[in-house]
Structures are given as C-alpha cells and as structure tokens.
Length: 256
Image (cartoon, rainbow, N blue to C red; front, side, top):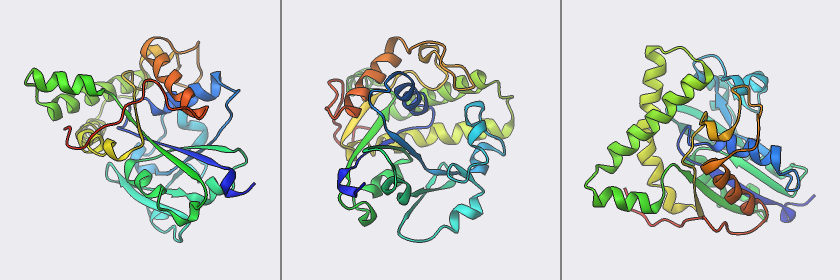
C-alpha cells in the first residue's frame, strides 16, 4: 500500500479529557470504519512504574512503553520526539507508513502532533489534526462574561477529572500521584492555547472514567456510551467517515 492511499487523523488534548475511551469506543462499536491505531511510545516513568488497568496488556510492548532513557536514544527521521508533562515521548512514523489500513489514527501530545504535517517521512499522506477539549467556545465566552478566571477554572476542571480517574482505577493516593495530577492539570491551559493550530476541535466533556462511557477499568465496555460521551463518539465517527463533524469547532488564538 502506498503512502498516497493513506489518511491520518492525529488526536491531542489534555490528559484525562477522554481520548482513550473515545478511540476504544470507535473500534468497539463502529467496525464498519476500520482504522489502525498507532500510539506514541510513552515513558514508563510517566506511569510511576506500573500501568493503569486498561494498559496492562501493553506494558511490556516497546511500541507503547519504554524507559525514558531508551526513548531518548531513538534516532532518525522516522521518529518524532517531544516532552509531555515532563516525560519524553516518541512517535515512530514508520508504523504509520507501514500500517495495513487506509485510515490511521494517532493519539499524541500536541508537541508531537504539531510536527506531523511537515514531516517529510509522511509525504503524500493526508493529515488531519484534531484537538479534544473539555470545554467549547460558548462555555469559554460565558466564563469571560461571568468574570471567571479561565485558566484557574480549567486547572480545577482537569484536576477534578484526573482525581475521578484515580478513583475509577482504584489507585491509592500518594504524594507522587497528587503531584502528577497537579502537573497535568496545570499543563491543560497551555495545551488548550494550541487548539487554534489544529484543523478541528472536538468537545469531550466526559473524561476518562466518566460513567457515560459505560466502560470498566479493564477497558471492557459494558454497553454503548450514552449522553455527552455518545455525542463525542458520534462526532468522531463522522470524522472517521471522511466528513467534517457537525459538532466540530474551529478556534481562534488567544482565547485563554
């Protein structure tokens, strides 16, 4: 299969915004739109030494997790490097080029995603960048009208989602965990400021672990997503089908 036959959709967004369950739901409930999912290689240290329950089967796969020192040693134009929440990541572009399906989806930090459209290694592949946000344009305008500090609000919103995910996975609280949550929540505003550089913004108000995803901590779905999670899935399915989602937004810069 040649490069020109492929279409790449690259997802980015704050930690715990719901990218993982969104991708899993698309594969589980929309087999009529098959895609290859290529993951960035994440640092084992970013998980504080052990995977979340839904990552257990991937923990020993070097295409998904490696020690930080190994990620930093990956060299060549097939690799894109970035730092996410203080930890290194790398994306192996050869996995995209060699993917069997016409449609490839990547979930990566915004610093990786920003490099995809200019990567010569992907010449001939159509790249669509998608930012997944926990709030939409209308809400941001309302926050401003109510004289709410948008950055502080966003930090609190994401901290709440990250704490909910901790409860969902049954992870015990520790000083290291709370520090990690503070760092990830604190990075959210900077991440949202880059949303204007993406082709499309999708809104995902229900983060990972939200009941509306109908998903067990192991990653198994108990039923189809409902409510706002279902609306996010519907928009993403439109994108997989090659259409601009009706619910998609296009952001201007300097919104936060």
